[in-house]
Image (tube, rainbow, N blue to C red; front, side):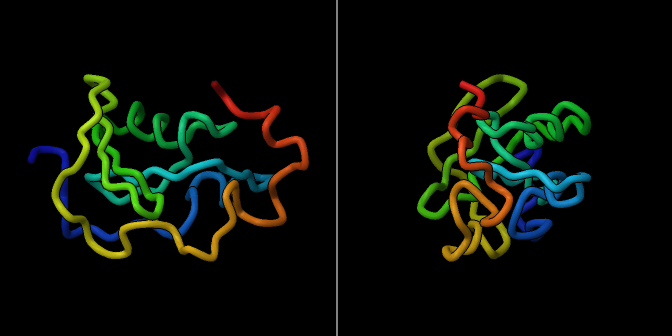
Length: 116
């Protein structure tokens, strides 16, 4: 499928942009670019890096990077696909990683910072 590169590994275990921000950010859930493997935070997260990556690069498809979720989202057409091709491992964030995460960067009032 165009826009999916099943051979490319994920960029890391957390949101690449939150991890490099100054100060570092935090996320609610993670999304993986199906084309380049960039890990970004979801649209409920304060920074919404996954959709920002899609807009900046034209990489339209992202897969959930959450355990037990195999769906893809098409940012261009706003279409949810319940499943798709397998991507290079790992297929989700580490099970030990806190949600929201990462541990130590999430404010106590985190629910007040989510986008709805």
